[in-house]
Image (cartoon, rainbow over all chains, first blue to last red; front, side, top):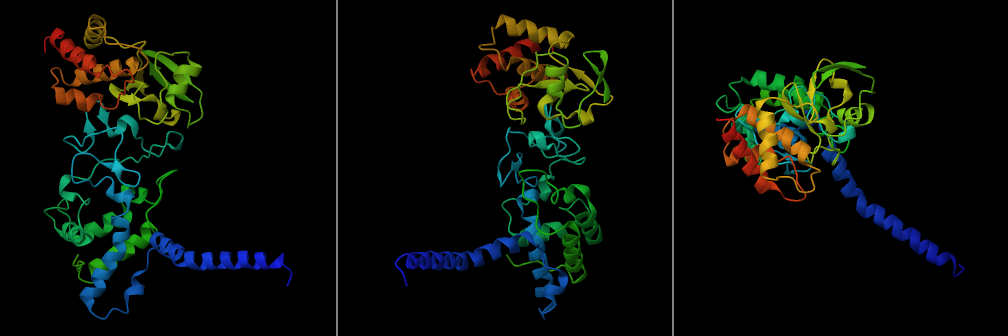
Length: 205
Length: 152
């Protein structure tokens, strides 16, 4: 073997080793962008554990920045990966901002990619009672089920909202520069429905 | 193509849907009182009024202009506008002046909605209008004084 070939083999081996080391990380990143179907949880025998596992899977969406950013536990939303909204807008009495700093001061009924501003006809903050930031997934689950904190909705209405609402759907078409929520709204909706149909058990944490 | 009113006059604007109102004003209509600062709704220099409310012209696409009523710094009028203009002059608010068109349009929108704003009201309303000369103290004082002038 010539002296010239040996370094080449070493370089190739290094590349293979690096790719092998990166593969699990890339697989995990990919898993974060997809949603498992309800059937993937059929192997869990305990019904409550199966139901909670499906909510945990749906939680990839609920706790994604596209959803969390406008479910703040205070008066100011976050943006991007979760940093404070710029400029420093406030919730206001109706969840649509105050005086000169209304959501519609900048946000239109559709994304405006040239200005990097997202938009939707229903653009607004979730009410304080529906805050998800700084909550565990188990706490979010209890909150989503509780009519006193979910806008007085039945579970069936919650399923319908998650599966069909256009502002929820925006999370999968968020415009340039923003990562979409994992999976699709249809896949998310089927998970939430399967969770509700199986007793709507919540994760313990 | 959009038919709208700008400063009270009927206008027909031919622009692609994703052309911002700010470009229409400054490039097509040569109305350069409204300033370009950042282009991404972070600074407030391009603030105008659309249907009576403050809006950022840099992120308002031509696609949504049909039938809207746009007022710019060149055309804003009425008691509140007059009071703001006078107090701005009296307190010598502007320094370099670049942001002031946007500051004034936001101040007018605020006073049109809340005639006697608190410091907190002013801070919440003006937080989206950045001033690199940091004239914020004079801006707040001028808004209070304009409110007094208006007899609120």
